[in-house]
Amino acid sequence: MPTALVTGSAGFIGSFVCQKLLSEGWRVVGLDCLSDYYDVQLKRRREAMLKQNEGYRSIHDMVETPGLLMSLFEEERPDVVIHLAAQAGVRYSIENPRAYLESNIIGTFELLEAARAFPPQHMLLASTSSAYGANEEMPYRETDKADHQMSFYAATKKSSESMAHSYAHLFGLPITMFRFFTVYGPWGRPDMALFKFTKAILEDQPIDVYNHGDMKRDFTYVEDLVHAIWLLIDAVPQRPDDGVVEEGDSLSPVAPFRVVNIGNSDAVQLTDFIAAIEASLGKTARRNLLPMQAGDVPATWADASLLKKLTGYAPDTPVKDGVGRFVDWYRDYFNL
Image 1: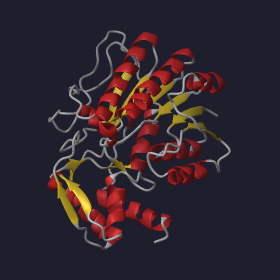
Image 2 (image 1 turned 60 degrees about the horizontal axis):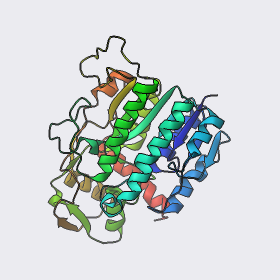
Image 3 (image 1 turned 60 degrees about the vertical axis):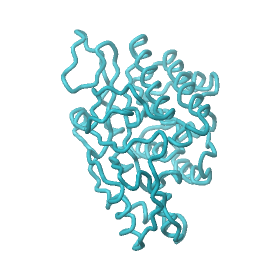
């Protein structure tokens, strides 16, 4: 029975990843600090479902705790590591940047040092579409320049990519970085648009619509994302002997390291996303139109052709279907 270490295991994406691994017969060691960035009860409910499986071990601590991951790697010797623990959110990174420094950068450093001492077969680390920053060439391709991040959150994630590449080069650690594109679905985070909009509309409160609704996002359904991560476990990057990389591949010429987009390959207008929520709820939103918020970008759009080439799969759940599943979950979770 292979063992996976999943950080951020009680988080939105992490809990789905753990469920997938457990369903495939893996043993899972889940690490999560249960931070109070949003409703801890939601995290505890996710974790309670995971604990129903005998193959799941739960650990509550912070990834940046000195020596914690080193001890955990030595004890568990994980075959695969999926690193999802991070301080998320663009706006909060303006208010509390130190939380991002500690969790996203120091936490990643602790992880890389542990892997250096006890190398797993493959490490898969979460990054973000925000890493593309001011790049206006769309759809985003992994080989595009990503030099001008617009928020400190994005800067810490891009920094983690650079750190991971250096360890892959120096110590031969196979690492895949995946860049997420606006993940949504049941059990989603309360600070994200779908949760906030649904709650506000049901409570007859106005919703904040930034840039007056002139925004596009590549909304990616969570189960599609998790299936892509599952398939990428077997797509272990290998350093090319001759340093030659095939066109369109983000594989490093000097390390077993690759960046992969995971997105729906469809830039959806924010107003259309809101319309899908309204249709699922059977209620019309009252809109509070606002300017663009600091650190945000007007559009994201993934080219997922590399993912398709590596795994034979690309996410494709239509927004109206994914939103409908979230609304069904929301009504059930809050007994509405």
